[in-house]
Image 1: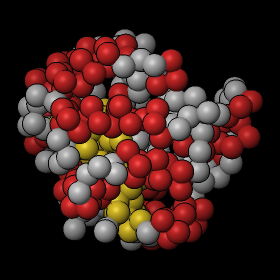
Image 2: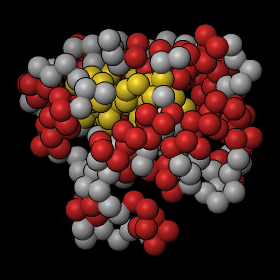
Image 3: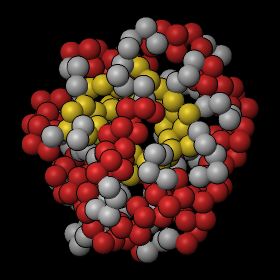
Length: 279
């Protein structure tokens, strides 16, 4: 089975300079995470390729650097970068990035915007339509305050292929479920919308989570979206706050154990490759 990790990050320790990082996060996150750190973990789990989702800092220079990183490491099969969606020049920027085969789309730190409805601003929608016009993708980084706008943006830009990162970040640690499930049911009505089965263990209790805590969320998403619109993502190295790369993948495999091998193959790799146009 060919496994594709649809969501991982790289960064340098310097991005944390001047940032007040909570002590429980600093020990594991405040260091360099580069391809040479991830590749042995992929090899150990039989993961063939990854999608590098740019995290911080949000800058065109960071996207350009990530494209160079992919060129030097062919197993980084796709880059989800950043560009200012509100800029009148965003189309020109996208055309520049599209010269690199690994470039597949953008993500914005929507969850950090003070306006939870930022995604529906006219200038943002204009930028999203530039993505759609080039058949690029957009990763939706949303948390509960943003949920009402997920279906709104899907309706506003119906030609844009979107994927919801980290299953929308429900607070698994406190059992948030019913309101999340209602949002997912509505989102699933939009055929261009997919979901990443990623970031779940860091929304659960970091010290005591178990695969059974994740199973209802995974089962609900498969029920609503089907096995062809959900995809595995490790969220490495952020996942290290709550577990290892191996534990993330093992937990998801346990949640998928009742699916056929062919169905598991879709979730663990084929869906991500289709969405991001990975050959």
